[in-house]
Length: 500
Ligand code: BES
Ligand code: MN
Ligand code: ZN
Image 1 (cartoon, rainbow, N blue to C red):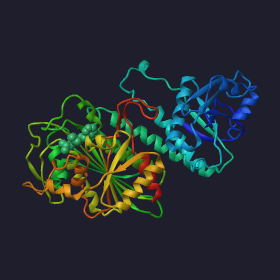
Image 2 (image 1 turned 135 degrees about the vertical axis):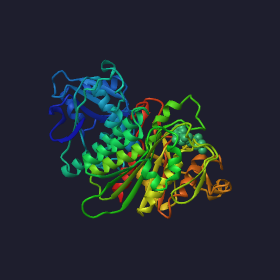
Image 3 (image 1 turned 180 degrees about the vertical axis):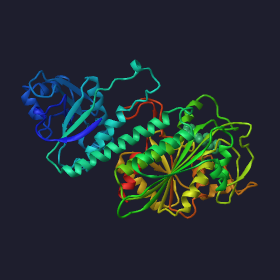
Image 4 (image 1 turned 180 degrees about the horizontal axis):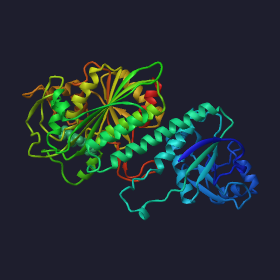
């Protein structure tokens, strides 16, 4: 899939599908002059207008009309696409538009589309921003996870090339295209990692993926196995890893930009490649989905890839805390007390609260390097789905300015993020046992409890925690994501990193 800029008129552009967009206005749709719709209509003897009227097409979001052109203009088809009302034109809508365009191309067995990129800002969104959103949407909507299906059961995709016709600032637009493609590929990459079952995505294999990314982009990489974790006194991480035959991996990647460094950011991802719950075993009903319990690590690795490709002027240290969580003769038992790297003792009440154990030590290591910002992403609590639902990620943090920046980044990226309080009073309930802290218990607000636990392992860093257990996975196919992993929060993180 490739996107580029072009010049000239839509009616004479060599492409399979000419796309014209329509806004909904007073319950009716009208073709625009500015995107070539009026010109095409004229060249087709007014057929487009007639179809809009006869099909009662109002420009409602996502509605389409496909018109074969029978050689009257160069493109073989015109795709009229409704965008809804102008004032509701958001990043998300434009992404959906990008997804619908590519889906319609595939349905027509077409390889290419062209669309006019208008110069003016639309509902506060500059052309470069809209361009980025449409391309991101094309990537999001075209993703399929089919590598385990036999060849003729895989969906066929013919779409290969999208062109944006513009007379505008080429350099700026080209940068948008590059960034959007990097984000799009990052989303595909993280979805692939999360959708891959535990047998084919062990901690060792996740580390191999990280090594490949590091090699391709000339990043630094260091992988700690059991021996190093022991030497570095990471007792909380090891408590989870001791119950599985698969060796754990703490992957540390470094990206250093050329020239001036605007900020030093540490990104930490939960990489539990399969979470059975351990001795506190999970019910079997949805256990198979716990292959996506490494989505935090997948999002961190994919974000790093996109940031390095875009050569963002920030120094990034990425940490992937990878292990399985299995019940085994050697597994950690409820009630066991272990010592974390920062010296705190932890009573493991529930072996299914393993993510916070892995992250506790990984955050400690990341915090020791004194980054300007320390951000972790984790499918930490099932409660996140109850707190904010599947469209949102939950965010909690020790530094309100950082949280505010991330909230602003999510709005700018067209994703949904909602802050929950790090209520200190709830902490008391898990600090009264035989150890310094317990890994479970306290308030029923489990997402807050997870965040509070982590807050004890970040030193005095400016820190924020994304609980993505809600939004990392979708149970149904929708326009921007097929059933499975979503890659949520990659656009938000890139937007944040770009804003520094
Ligand atoms: N990986 C799970 C959280 C999860 C559940 C993610 C469902 C996605 C969907 C995590 O390790 C876990 O088991 N959390 C427990 C914590 C509890 C034992 C304190 C939970 O949320 O129930
Ligand atoms: Mn668990
Ligand atoms: Zn887990």
